[in-house]
View (spheres, rainbow, N blue to C red):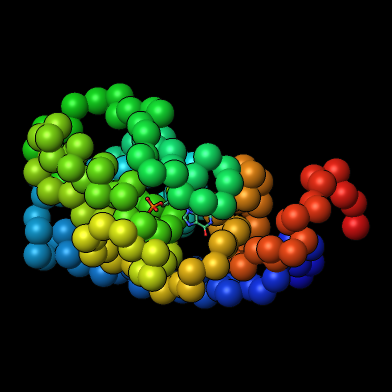
Length: 195
Ligand code: IMP
Ligand code: MG
């Protein structure tokens, strides 16, 4: 496989992601079927755009015995750069009522935890019955607020990561693996550079 030139190190391969999505699908389905039955046996998978797309696409195909609706919100905190902005902002809100709904929030990565903490609070205010959180990646060392994920795929180091939904300047979300970005190379990087 051709590795992107901005990659310093591949941390998680496509195969590892696939296997993890299968395992998470099993655990989450089991939870909603046996421990937290939902109205009409249906959950609302709420993806945070844009990073959730590859993970959510794979995860929902691994749910078994549980029906799911899908919706999305856009909450911005990084604005395409590499540093977390202080206050997350809702740029695209839910288009429907969520009163009494059981919501599964789907994230690509949790770093400071501010985004998810704010959205969880917001969803409860809007009348959600329950809000659970699944994230593919958990950067626990970056946590600035008290937030525990309900399910996560992989613990990751504090480096800036790219691929499988994670962007650098809105690009590289399409890489089929998770990688550490090469900080030296991005200093002089031009997107027109060909290799
Ligand atoms: P938090 O509010 O600090 O937890 O922000 C989480 C959001 O920041 C994620 O949904 C990502 O969009 C973004 N983010 C955090 N770490 C990284 C990273 O290493 N690469 C790309 N985006 C990241
Ligand atoms: Mg995100």
